[in-house]
Length: 77
View 1 (cartoon, rainbow, N blue to C red):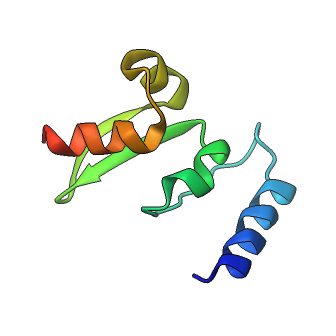
View 2: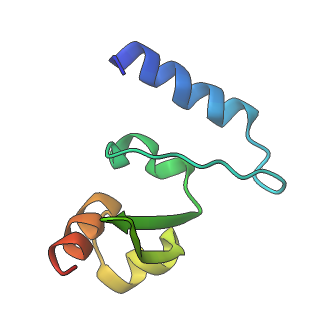
């Protein structure tokens, strides 16, 4: 997706998301672009769930940004 469309998609999600009553599934490798939208994250590799946890738990455990956590988890898969 081009940068303007990406911004439009992210803004649309932010402006229409009721965090108490909504679930959104996003499949992306552009983790930095959507990290602020996540409460929970699932990391898949070769069709298998490697991690399913809250962003808060992952950041506390790994002490690094979510994109780096993704790389670390995949490296050790």
